[in-house]
Image 1 (cartoon, rainbow, N blue to C red):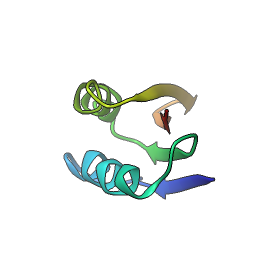
Image 2: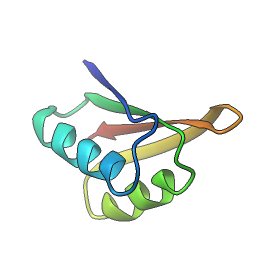
Image 3: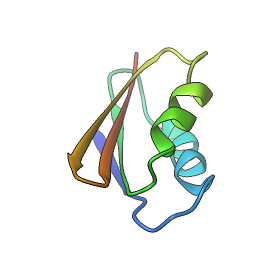
Length: 73
């Protein structure tokens, strides 16, 4: 399962809070995908999920728009 979250226009720390909330709901092997226009969201999410058993990947899909994927291991 992949849970997509639209965070376009959200200010810090909303993307991180939304990611943490959804991460708690998913099971091992599932993903949370955030779409954001906030450049610092990726580093904030990486830092916050550092101690979790997950993989965090980010990609700038369009200039100024990032897709951040968190996969629970």
